[in-house]
Image 1 (cartoon, rainbow, N blue to C red):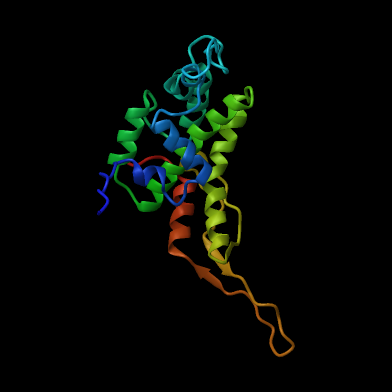
Image 2: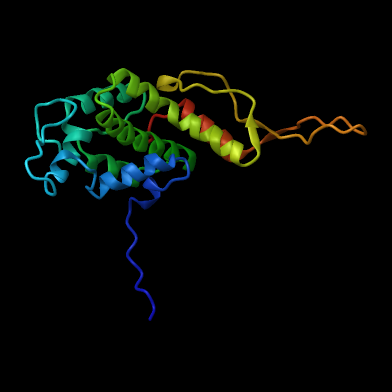
Length: 215
């Protein structure tokens, strides 16, 4: 008996983008499904479990509260907004914007990676009993470039430099030229690495340096 194909969801490419760190993608997927193990959700299975938010201690800890409505989450998003501009009122608005906005593939992938990292690190702070918002913002801003370099290494490529995330499109260190790993030198030849420009990596770096969303 043939299996029935499930309909594709519009957000799949955003969640499972190759630039998303796997654990970030999983937490984002769980949040989209409204299945994070928040206190409100756990209270359905455990009697007399208090449901106050672990971060603000003022409201019921639901999926939407912990990621969007909590003052801690707002502080994190405000810090990100200075560098990465997206509507931040609701999850639905960001989802619609990310799915409908058109731009280069690299730019879109960076947008996906930043959003996935934002959801992940807010949840991470909840699980670790509050991490200062500025530290969470710092970690989020490091993720796209960290993932870019990880993907480069997995392809046998090493970046010649470590580009930094530059706010508001300011000029920064240019990278994107990669070197193939050289075989160990033999007694007959001295092999050196030759620079190879990889289009995807250059595009990703350009998008990371200027991550403002187009459109």
